[in-house]
Image (tube, rainbow over all chains, first blue to last red; front, side, top):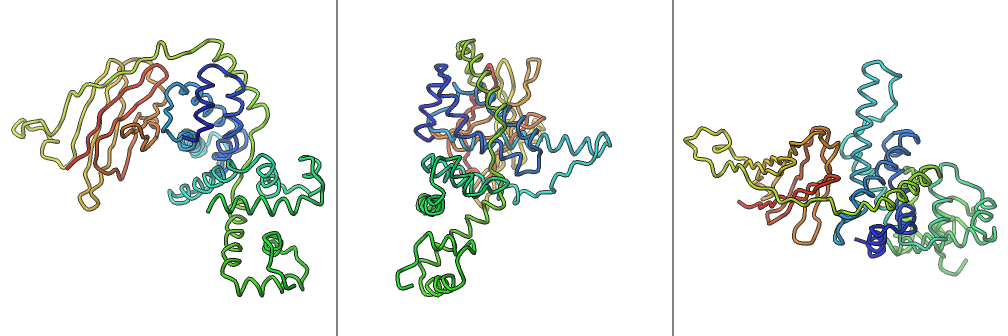
Length: 177
Length: 203
């Protein structure tokens, strides 16, 4: 397990609120994005995110240092995503509600989507906060904001957004290779 | 443009942001330089992943609610003092059954094991795949105490190393496929107890 994750888990076991906030912050995008990438709505994704972190809370004292927290969270979130998808599909087939627009996805496609999320989690988590926020804003938000908006949001000069982005991408490439 | 192309120029070139003349110069250098080609390939992969992947933070209300729930959880001091760790006892092993007893699994290729604890039984079916020298383990958690938990998390340990993790489905079932032989320990967890099942995979 990542050294910082293990420190946070140990602190959470002692009831330290700040540690919990940091743990959630480190993985909330990963967990929320799993149902989104498998065709569920933002409301469903919010419910699954909440459920997944509550299960984590209940299991804090069982996690071990050699465990893999990303895999653990990913498995719980994906499991609940499949279950909700299946239930929605069943309800749609029974005519209880309009047919859900869930993508028909085979196991290989599911695995590929999960690997993309893991790749992003691993790479972005190893960048500094500024780079992470910048790349998320420029490349991963649903609607790409203007440089002026990003500069205002991150407290940087508009002219430095482009060069900083290039440095951050280069750093990410080095990390992932 | 005599200097080598910078990474920033490559980023702009891949995204089509360069003026035509500069783009042509970059293209010429890329065509002649394997290192630049590798950089371009990585940038295009990153762009494909970022274009095809939603990567969003949940609504602020979710985080706020999780904060409140953790505060309540910590206040209740829900330490594992009431939490039990149980080592399951082997109750049935198909390989230990005499063939004359007529037990189906005795003659079958799959090995069946049933472990018992006060809270749940665990049925395992182990199938060896000789072609790959790997094993598939199907598990079924059968709670004996009501109400049955919604879900169990299942970890597979080898020594102090977690090899696999999964969760049971609606029927309490789980599977680990393509497992190499060896000595393992299954940890099946519920809010109030953990069941430990020793597992040996060998020919």
